[in-house]
Figure 1 (cartoon, each protein chain N blue to C red):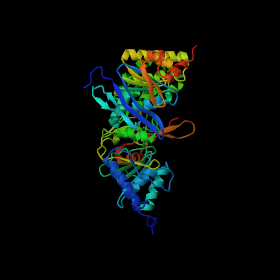
Figure 2 (cartoon, one colour; figure 1 turned 120 degrees about the vertical axis):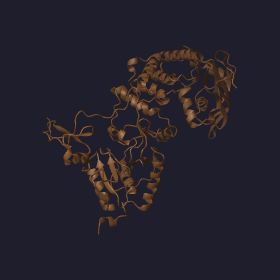
Figure 3 (tube, chains in turn orange, brown; figure 1 turned 60 degrees about the vertical axis):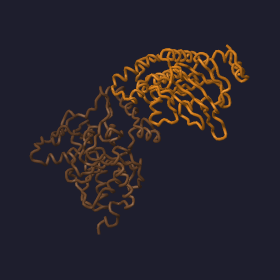
Figure 4 (cartoon, chains in turn red, purple; figure 1 turned 135 degrees about the horizontal axis):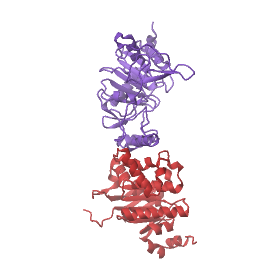
Length: 260
Length: 291
């Protein structure tokens, strides 16, 4: 049924409450192949809740998310079986956490971390798994000889790059990122952003990036969604929204960026 | 009056045995699946085989002949005390001969003599979950078993090769049962893994502290996990037993003095004694311990 122009992922009327509090209310959006969407807003605006809902890690109180599988079928994600959902999560999707410890096994070597997804989809040849892991470590600029080191011995920037390699190894079509550059110094941030940008370009990767850093949004994203109090208050092309914000809150947000 | 008269047969009350038998039936029906059970306090500390003892107590009948081994030996503390425990509480016959036993409780070994139909091998299991050291959450490991989501298990073997150049796991070597569940064969040496495959005897596993029972019905397929380019290899010894001369069996290192002297002998004491007693065994004379 789908045409090439149809979005990869469509969310409709997503709502999530935490008791009396609103996590996110009536959010609808579509993400196309190769498109990078940034979700911005201050702390507590519902960015992470939205990411959790889109990536099926949280269940919504209302609304649904549809996804076009590699087979071309469009599926309601919340109607998928657990096994199918997990398979999707570790093959067609990626998730990069702000805290690398959530996304990596800190006691397992870099090679083992990257190889895990391959072994999960049935790779059983040590030599080939290792070669593929080396290949991806190189692409994220981690030296080959670090392949047997544990991420606990890596710097913050290396851990984030390792997380990306771990996710990219199965060639996902969609990757979710929660503040991927949070807590990194600016030069390390710049390298990481370069890397993400090149992967988006090289592999036609679609991405949803949650960030409070408007500079990151400007550099990486095609489209931007501004959230406040759990609602989407403004959305549009990144340059348009950042250069000419319509909503007073967005204007405030843009004006609050420190100029160097 | 014998001590057995003071106890219900085999120590446990009948309701408890019934509960354990139900768990055992389920375990046999789903080979390799860990069945939770209401493990009881036993008059011995956790780690000394409380799980195995409860399983043994539940399957024993008055006509059974029990053998208990610890690391292959019939004469170690754990084996002797569990054997005495059942002599006292069940009044049953015991033996050290593998071929005569109907129930064999074991810690860490499978006897060298082939097991036969009708025999039951009961394993004492400390940690039943093969994924535990990689994934500490029980909720998550249960889900991984349910969904056959076993990529993680190979991560462990990958790490072994990355660090040591070969799969360095030598005991508690993970197996896949009946093409479905991944199972921890208890801390038996990997040398014994091939004996589990298509074994004619019923194999029962009891973990008392962790409150889990699992089983391998007779003639169940048991495959040790590996990589295509690093296949499973049984432990090999480059020597034979220094007492009976047997080769191709599992050896124990016995320290003989405080100057580094040691000798290598069968870990299975019954097997070793049987060979030395048999006239055709042609055992070599016992040599001076090497220095």
